[in-house]
Structures are given as structure tokens and as C-alpha cells.
Length: 140
Image (tube, rainbow, N blue to C red; front, top):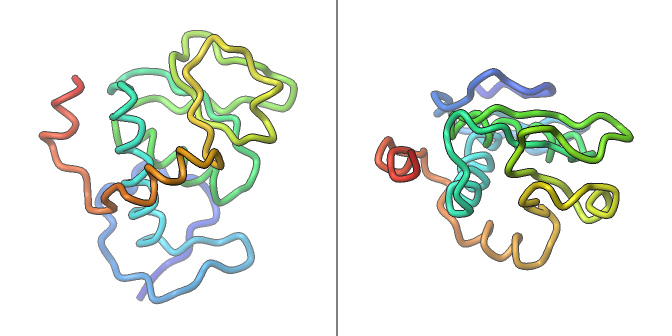
């Protein structure tokens, strides 16, 4: 049986249940969330993001926002959601956003633009397998 996630989870690393459920009505099955967040977490690690680091989140589509927060938590970083009108998060070296929000953000963070073609290409070829300790230690 699969549950549906409609709000950010504190930590979804342990989820391993098969999905079986499609994305519908702004919901994402927990197993899908886990796989999608694993892919995004690997992109963050490849950019040099580390555990304990503050990562700004400027992502409007709800599903993408949930996945981004889960990915940040997976690597042990601290998600810092930007409210409307905020252009940066103090102390955040990295950030996750979309093309629609990027123009309003400062260049003070290394922004990963989710819907950028190069990001999507890297995302699609990255593994969705669970992160292993060696991946996390490699950047710590």
C-alpha cells in the first residue's frame, strides 16, 4: 500500500514502498517522492552542496517544492524556503528554483534551475537509487 505526500516530510530516506499510484491532484506517492528526491540530491551533491549547509528553495509548483525540500534533507542540508518577494536567503550558498522565479533572485547563491534543459538532462540520467553513506561522506 502506498501513501500520498501532500506536504514536505521531515525525512523520507527510509521510504521503500512501491508506488503503484499516479501523481494526481497535487499529490505524489511516497515511493515516487523518494526516487525523485534521490535524483535531485545527487545533482546537489555534484554541485558541491554539503550536510549542514543552508539551501534556499524558491520553487512554486507544489510537487517540485516537496521534492526539492526532501532532496535537501536527504543530504543533511537545511532547506530555507523563500517567501514571495524574498530574493535570497542569508547564508545560503546554494539554491533551487525554476526559470519563472530565477529573474527575481540574487546571484549570491549557486542556483540550480529545475526546468533548465541542462538540469533536466542531468536529472534524467542520474540514479534514483537510495543514497548511500559513501556518497554523503564524499562531500563532507
